[in-house]
Amino acid sequence: MWKTIIATLFAGLLAFGTPVYAGKKGEIELAYVEWSSEVASTNLMKAVLEEMGYKVKITPVSAAAMWQAVGSGDVDAIVAAWLPTTHSHYLAQVADKVEDLGPNLVGTRIGLVVPRYVSIDSIAELNANADRFGGKIIGIDPGAGLMSKTEQVISDYNLDQLKLVEGTGPIMTAVLGDAIGREQWVVVTGWTPHWKFAKYDLKYLVDPKGVYGGDEAIHTIVRKGLKEDLPEAYAVLDNFSWTPDQMAGLMVMNQERRADPYKNAKRWMKENADVVAGWKSGTKSE
Image (tube, rainbow, N blue to C red; front, top):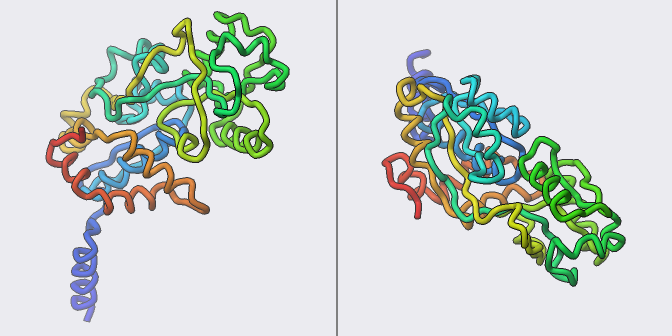
């Protein structure tokens, strides 16, 4: 009887494509910052690697802690490295202890963002209009590279009439949405890709001094030795590459009510099976 039950369970697991022995290929840990883009990409990598038979742990931390963890080898990889500008100072601290596998997404940028109805177009115009913005630039978590760059912007542009307010990504978008609902002026720290650009009509303020840099890319960084320890996982991380539109599709799913980023990642995998197959076989998305 027991043999029959076990055989039935085994067949059922195979039918649904679920690994019979979770973690049979080893364990891997990924760290990430809780930006909507990195929540999407990290949960997606977790789902892909688990489907391949790995036991995967994902850990949300600050940007500084994320880089320290991969540099020390406490975690195996990150798919959330914004380079060459936003995280450049973090990379410099651990460059000899990690391996940069290159971009997994190109076409990103950072800067100050306002609703399109705001009539100024440049960071240089902020001080003169500080009262209309309530004297605030709405930021995110204090450890983010975007925040340090914004502090530099405040200094370089002499924005002495505005204060950078620390918070989180969700708080920033909540303040943005509330201001737009009231048709008030608001300026926030922003980055692309992000779902807010799909939901609201927004624009970046021009940065004449180029403090925020130009277009960036999100890179995959792994600890030294991962290739030797987990070669198949290393290969998938190396092959992982998608487009801003593909990422935006998953981020929009994650804004649904009671959304579960991990379940949405598995849903996205099913809907984009050919893309995922390319990562496993060595074909990167273009």
